[in-house]
Image (cartoon, rainbow, N blue to C red; front, side, top):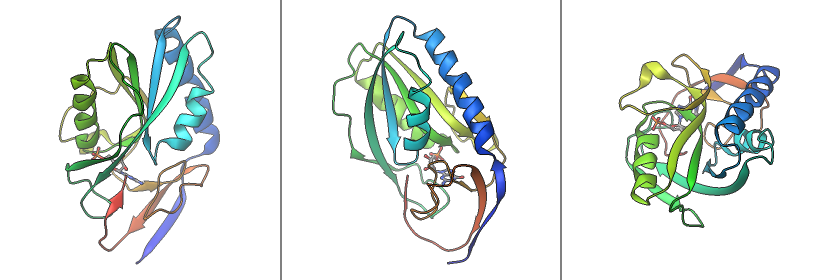
Length: 184
Ligand code: 5GP
């Protein structure tokens, strides 16, 4: 497999600042309310961990996780989503904030938002660290967006290529070749 991690696209200092802003925005919108923050494993873990620490206890936050798997080549989603791990608790009548690492075509998130709505929550919103808006195939309402980025495959700050690079503190572009299944 040939791949190369490029220079930094978004430095860790910029991510830190943006996550503080997002936390403030979320805190204002949900002040005095309960909020179930649903992290999509594994890519959103690093972002979610930083995000929730920037939401003060004026919001009653609980955490839950979902793991989904998408079939396609290593760098593109097919739109066929399989639930690998479901939520632990009911979200009926709850305010839900889905936290995702990146929105690309929007297929994964539009599926997940629809799935959440079927469970009759009080509300559902999406928070995504990164957004490749030009790649969108289906509409997704991203209420809280960290950064819009160009159509490049990126790794770091939780995002992987073939399971690697999640531990990089900044976001980098990676050039890849080859075919395999991607766990998202
Ligand atoms: P979508 O369904 O919006 O096309 O794709 C969403 C999922 O594809 C993300 O959760 C992520 O796992 C994966 N993905 C899309 N673009 C990238 C990227 O640039 N880097 C990485 N590491 N994953 C990506």
